[in-house]
Image (cartoon, rainbow, N blue to C red):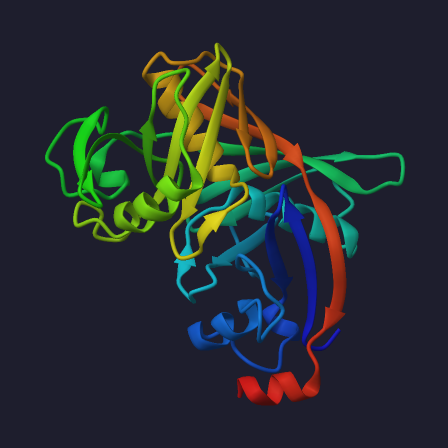
Length: 289
């Protein structure tokens, strides 16, 4: 379908999937911003682009709504997997996808209608090394490092799951508010310690195997859910001894199940939904040009 799109969401974190070979225009940052605009475009938390690869079954580029590019997205990978199955790109239940944040393995779980309504993703290994974040601190591991944001002294754990994350914990029994997220999220995302910006999670353990997080995504802002953020928060909580694996990560949009091995390999399982398929109108495309 010329200038076609597939729209889906993972727990309210929504993406548009496109095949650049079927588009009459290139996905430049300004066009990505126009398409993702929730008032003037289709509206989404980003665009997933099917691209060629020689290293996996499928290649994926992930674009934020501000036009920047992300290395990896857990919810995006689940949506991309459902797209591939739904439009007949694959009939396999197991396949691989190459992202800028590394190679991942996908497993589809089909419901009684034959839809891939749940997906498991092998998300790779978490790293707490500053160079992988990247972070300007000269320390061996980014565990409980002090930071000041929006005039507030905090302690963060830095972790990469193929893309960078800054996790800030409160003790069990305490809580974070949306106002905290709106204040601290952008301040931490753009902090001088993170020269390439970072994703942010405000987290609190709510049980021996359970976390609740609020999410500020780099280049997207507040989101209802995030797969990579869930993986980052779960691995950081396990590293600090706050929870044990498997971890149920709860978010405003719902929950994901995260397995964290002893060497911090991560497996994420969660639901995914298709919302719509269609094509951009000729007049909208003319405006993009």
